[in-house]
Length: 147
Image 1: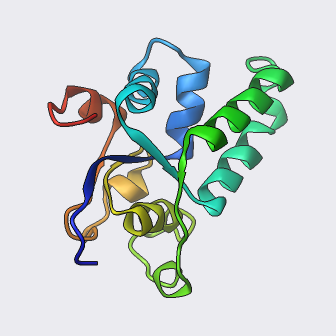
Image 2: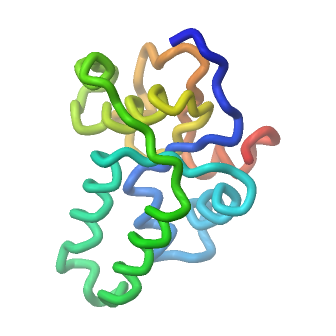
């Protein structure tokens, strides 16, 4: 892609959303707060579906009640910039885990500058798309240019 990346657009991996919901004082929660206040959350149907599937797992029942999970998904869906991933883009691979590529595809489709993740497969991508910055939550909150 040759278009310039938007420095306010951020793709947040599922693990960061869940960590933020479970621990409101950690780096993932700080990332989510900053992006919701000053940036633009990017979602695709695939990244949203992954978050939804993970949030409904019974292991979170003791930590996040059903109403909170519903509200989180609703509010996130309403606040997000929804990007369409073309079939050609969806066919590209970047990481060892094809499921993780959905987050890179989202960033590419929206020309997002940032992808925040705790997933080692994404953090170790050898050749990310030009200009895409893949960071941990801790790196993101310390980066001066991060929204």
